[in-house]
Image (cartoon, rainbow, N blue to C red; front, side, top):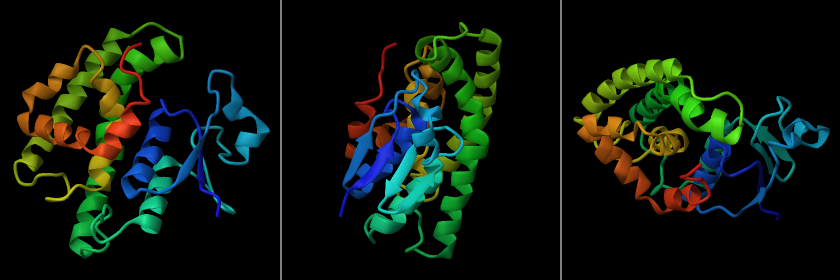
Length: 220
């Protein structure tokens, strides 16, 4: 059987997310490069994989998926084991509910807080080569992020990870954008939240995370 295929560029956060979970479960896959700056993601061939013209596209045999979090869940459900129960589905309804809660928090609270700073400091000026950094947007992003991190700090005083004492899908979804945030001049913000900082360092120490992050630039 042919390996699963991920279509995109590994430096893009949503592509990195899918690769991360493939690495976590030890699945065989092929990364098929898509040139974002050349607009290949808007061409008919890629639109068959992702009708919104975004990355990644994903193919497993006859199955085509898009949306990185959905792809990641598919990968976990196909290859996850009792020892790597990232969705909490093998542990019980309470455990899986907690994973769901903190997965939603990442998507609905954390991402909207951290993403503007990453876009303004890195993606827009260095990758997209569009507008220079808008400091007002950055400051607003940092203020919102402080509020979110305060809630995370309180949560992580009660458990090692967000959904409990085992690493989960919810934790690992934070990797791509936080990795880039830590390359900005504002990385020291995490020092204000020692439990969050320790949580982040424990995630970065995971071998799968290290393998994926080596394809994500730290200098622009």
